[in-house]
Image 1 (cartoon, rainbow, N blue to C red):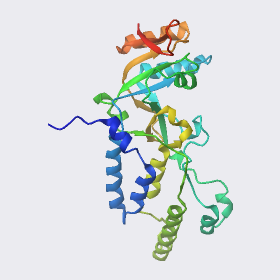
Image 2 (tube, rainbow, N blue to C red):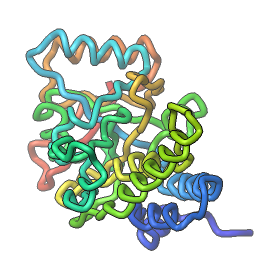
Image 3 (tube, rainbow, N blue to C red):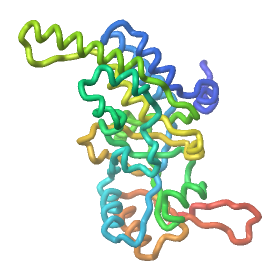
Image 4 (spheres, helix red, strand yellow):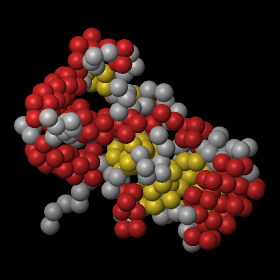
Length: 294
């Protein structure tokens, strides 16, 4: 009988490397090969997804936003935001290109004064595997413990839409130079344009999905200073504002207001999931948050 798969050990020995993954895609000779390689890379990312992921939510004095978040929880969904709205202004900037080498392909070089932004192609929602005993996560993402956290079971078949679009985040100090990739795309576009113009066709089509794969994979890379989050990202199309997400449990922050706590408890009863309040034993020698069942 084969031994049970140890995800933690495997993850330690084979960390996700989107730079290497993109290198494999670029080494392909045609779009059919690229598609097959991307499918294989996707299957590898599945091995990195833990059984349970958590999402922290802030609740503030903005009652309108609070109501929207709690209603989304009641509807058993998660909101997908744009990368530009994330708290890190460098999110989605894991790559760079040499401006001087690219601008020769542009009729108006001023058009490239602002770097090409591939992060606007889709939406994301952020999760973590650190659990609910993380004081930094409660402080940074749940309004100093005044918000709440939700656990989601990635094995639950009702969460298939969520789990199938979930990817691990890679942390690194370095960005990847994509000058050659962008340059090759311009060269292909120009060659295709010349070909179509000779035929009198006004539309130019490219069969290379390399840029699409790059925009997808490099959206899961962040600076190493964020590694304490152990983040995973649900990545969807730009028109998909929400994703179905069935909660496994709800955790009320230790400083959550009475009003917000009552509303969360009511939601938990409506959707029939267990709910806990986070607490710390004032007489314990350890800094340990404990979830207490309500």
